[in-house]
Length: 164
Image (cartoon, rainbow, N blue to C red):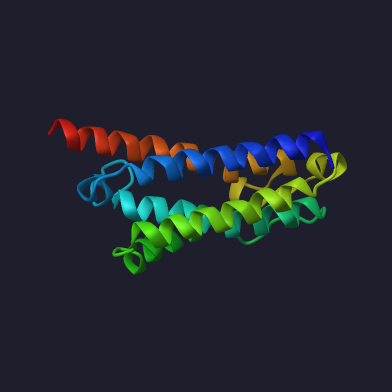
């Protein structure tokens, strides 16, 4: 096992753990609070992160195999996120936490299996304007930073709700 892959997997797990811990501490009002920066509720944003691990893991595997990521654009992502917000508007905390734990564990386990050569492999990524990106970068930009980015938004929404 690559030491770098292990460290990356641990960072994925840390982000998921921090999000789960915050969600567990939310009141029902916090869970339904609106995140102005997101245009969605705390519940939907948390469920979004939990479900995105699966897609992000699939994309990381493509890049690790030496293949380019094609056909994925921000327009497609935005459309999928809007559809997700509609279909998951009533998601529960319990189902979200279960999905978060399951999908982040799969992501971490997948990442642990990568060699340093796979982490260094670079191919074009359509989501990033066809830039030649490494697998490690994609892991850091998506399954790692994604949870932290949205957790910051969730925390701000909950804090704003508490001070209102």
